[in-house]
Image (cartoon, rainbow, N blue to C red; front, top):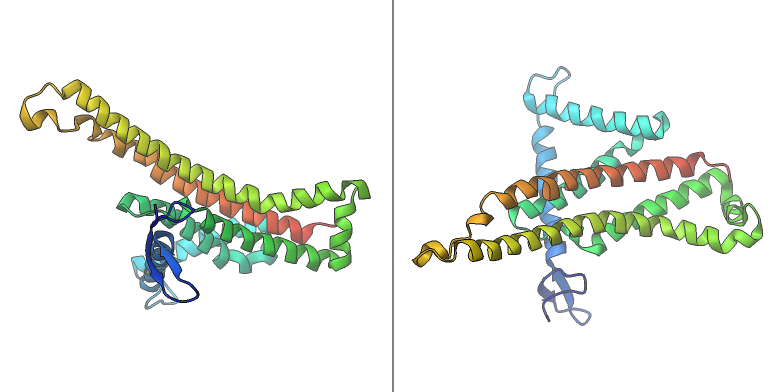
Length: 247
């Protein structure tokens, strides 16, 4: 247990400064995923022309158009500048979760990862509320409809990053746990059903062939993409709501 962090990620090595800084699978895999995303962007954006002549440029323009349409549709034209940020959230979340398909520890299964993203979003929400209403108006908003509600309004505000974190984290981790339990159960069932076969044939986990792959389509692919989309949607709606609110 000494090489496991409190969030469940394996500690790969320790940097011997400030008492030892642990480097976990989450951190290493996150950098690998960011490198992969960077390489994809680098490849798609090489040799761009005014009129697209390559499939790479057509794919790149399609991605940009879809993200910009998503941002405009949910936040408004004035928030077009958020398109790169939303694209980064979707790609980081989806690629992090899908990394489990390659045997990696998904960074989204680490609470620290999602909590960090949620805190960034919460900071932006607070910034736009202050920008829209002034600092005095922002503080006054906590006293509405009357001062007695101030503690509840504060808890509600702090609940935003908490709910975003645990919604995303819970769905990803539950998929990992369920897939692991099913994989182990199929191994036990296969042993019980086919254990009577002679020699090595009785030790082959027949029921583990195919079934986990089918379940992976839902837990690792569909859920991963869906949670990335939901987190991005919540980010856009919360920030746009904060900017347009009149507390």
